[in-house]
Image 1 (tube, rainbow, N blue to C red):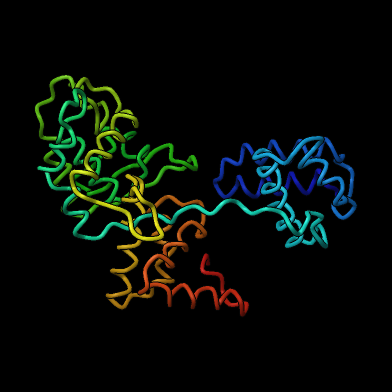
Image 2 (cartoon, rainbow, N blue to C red):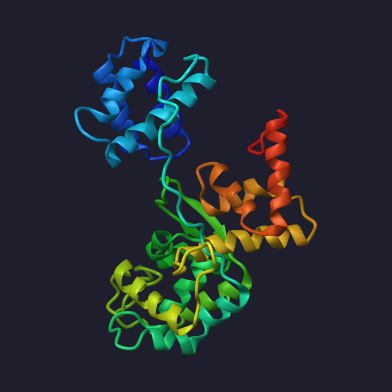
Length: 318
């Protein structure tokens, strides 16, 4: 198959999955311009690939990004029969390993949500108040939201009667409905019962979570408060993991705790993975399956899942 056509198919496939894929798409199109759109996929040589990756100078991070984009494309091309082999050097460097997410223990969560520790974290903060900050943390853990999703919620996106949040303009440009449990619903009701002041518009509009003047929460302000909260709550990382657990790890903790609860209830965790994937707003199951490896109880489930793939069993995405 012609290189230009195959790369167009690959880009369309990735974007159809919900990925932005902007940077990789631009790099792959640059590669097509260098090699030629009419070249056959199997005609691309290793020397041509190396020239594209390195050019006239030493290998850089930009070159690494090129390599990762090409590696993804050739896996796709080979799986579709567009090419028989990859021209990438076998010694290509892999992305640097990153520390795994920190999964908060129940005791750590209790300390993080303790109003006394939250109050300590907000000393000297002018715009962020205790109730808003604590409600944000409860949303990140209780509903597994991303920070941008939680801070982008409007009041009208919160339907307490139906116990549903409407998440709009997500990471993958998809909206979704997120059911919430009674404890989180009660916390949101308390938050919304505050006197309007400048925070909420008279017509019911405005952000669900906002600064005292009604403006959207800034990540820098919230991150500073969370760093203080983590110290006040004496929450530390684990050996081999992150030395400083992140606010985003509340979302990861939600996912792992949900899977663990299903496992202990005797539920079929593999069949429920697509449910969790949809709830979290993942573009596919790849981002969800990783949670199976994060606790000893779920490692067996992960092994069973990967064994099914190895023996040609049904794809868990079905």
